Amino acid sequence: MSMFTWDDTLSVNIEEIDAQHQKLVELINELHDAMLQGHANQVIGVVIAELTKYTQSHFSSEERLMKAHGYPGLRQHKKEHDQLLAQVNELNYRSQAGYTVVSLVVLNFLKNWLVNHIQGTDMQYKPFLNDKGIT
Ligand code: FEO
Image (tube, rainbow, N blue to C red; front, side, top):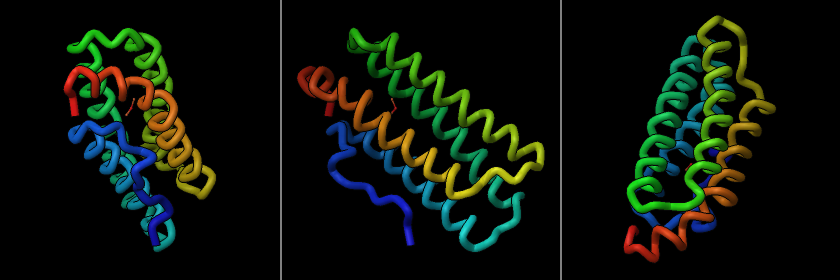
């Protein structure tokens, strides 16, 4: 059973970005399932590495979009991305170094940062970009 379900409260009404957010939700669910099924750290490490890579790529494409349309909140938004990425990179580093990193505490942390960031910070660009015809 998934720990995390996508719903419309997470939609920024931009197809490309919603698809990327959905992929992040899937990866967190995958991590949750791998943990529940008692997979070895190595398997879990592969999912964490993918989550890290995908987070980086999502943040970059969101920043490119904001920059291309002159979004005034870009600087502050990027600062938050950099902080979140540093936390995920740290998790990835610990996982690749062989530490057991996945627990419900870590999964809840990942879920909460994603939900809080999308519903808080990402939602702030929604009207700005949607008004420019970006959907
Ligand atoms: Fe969707 Fe700002 O990350």
